[in-house]
Structure formats: C-alpha cells, structure tokens
Length: 117
Image (cartoon, rainbow, N blue to C red):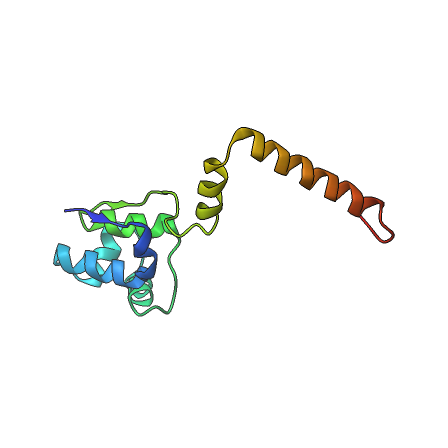
C-alpha cells in the first residue's frame, strides 16, 4: 500500500497520517514504536497532536507500517503572477523592451530625486 501526499495534502495533519498508516497496517502503537525504533509514548504524542514529528520521523513511521510516503513539488496552481506572465508573453518583444526601458528610466529618475534610493 502507498500513502501519497500531494499539494492539497498539506491540509492533512501529520497525526492523521500516522493514525491512518497504523490503522492500515493493523498494528498497535507499541508495535509501531518497536518497528520504527521509537517509544509508544512518542507515537501516542504524534497521534494526539501533542508533538509534531520531523519529516524523517514521519517517513520512518509510515515505512514501519509497510507503506510509502511520497511527496513532490509542483508549480503552484494559484500563483498570483501567472496572469501577469501570460499577459507579458502575449505582448510583442518590442513592446516588452519598450516597457523595460520606461521602467529603467523611471527607476533612474527616482534615484536622482531628493530622498531617492
């Protein structure tokens, strides 16, 4: 069995992953502790959200249940710059260069102004 953690899974707390992995394995907290090289009280703290396991510990706990925790990074779908990037790419090269020149000239004016950078 595999537990896959995707981008939206950041909403899933670590304690829920530990509880679900242990439930799927059908083992006790004591058995999970033995298999993962930690104490039963530590497992209980993780499952009750009294402690937050390090990512390496979370991987170890899930693996001790015979599962695999997978995580990956992907571009954010809600990137607020995405519309601006699309708009810029829709403009001609000449127009983008002209805009850059205008911005550079404005920045230079602001630096020369009293109190400028």
